[in-house]
Length: 57
Image (cartoon, rainbow, N blue to C red):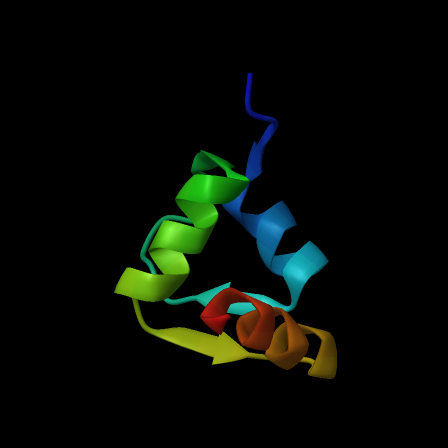
């Protein structure tokens, strides 16, 4: 079973803010990655930029 967290928690952990209206979504990491690829995002930290680079590989 996939580990799920709130969208706000994923954003804090990974350093990438997803521009969506509701931040109270319960998501797995796979769903969070899908949201990153399909929505507008803002990278807040260097850690977030590094995380995006690992997703592109």
